[in-house]
Amino acid sequence: MRRRSLFVLLLALVLVSTGCEEMRLRSQVKKLMASTVVLPEKVVRIDGREVYPMPDSLREKAKLIVYVDSSSCVPCRISEMPVYGRIISEAASFQVEVVILLANRSFSRIPLAQYVADRNLGIPMYVDEDNTFLTLNPAAARDSRLHSFLVNRQGTPVLVGDPVLSPGIAELFRQVLQRGI
Image (cartoon, rainbow, N blue to C red; front, side):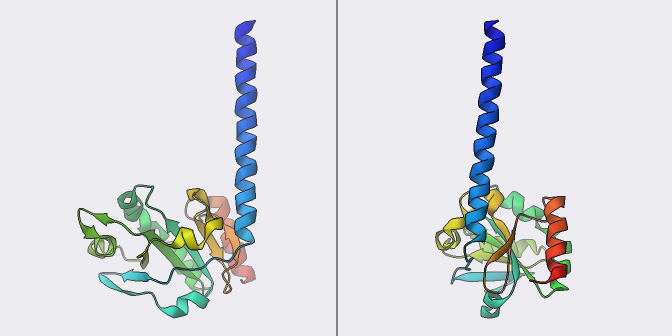
């Protein structure tokens, strides 16, 4: 009987904690959707093997921002980036840019921009040189599930989530593009 009571208690705790996590996530998404997302001042673009400053014109465009912070395995994430090629093409047909923004760090004393350029991934990528993205956008939170968002020309998020990682978000992404942002 004690074992059964303990099991029921543990199950109740798991359900409560799951509910709390879901409520926390919903609250963070709501806060993010009410914010304005800004790109840092010092961002470089890596296109093939070329590295140059991000064009200022990108600031006024609708864009899908995929932020990769330094807490994840950055080389692992970088090697996965070519899967964004399809989303980049799809977004471009609606005049929407895709900004894959990497938190700056070095690998074996090689600057991140050079590390990415050396891999010539075939898609444009960006590096937040001063690592200020999360400071400038506190609503983005530290939760990496909230590091991908489609923003309109004013920087207001219209969709939160990564269309590459979630088929449901991919479908919503297409719907938003077709409606226009």
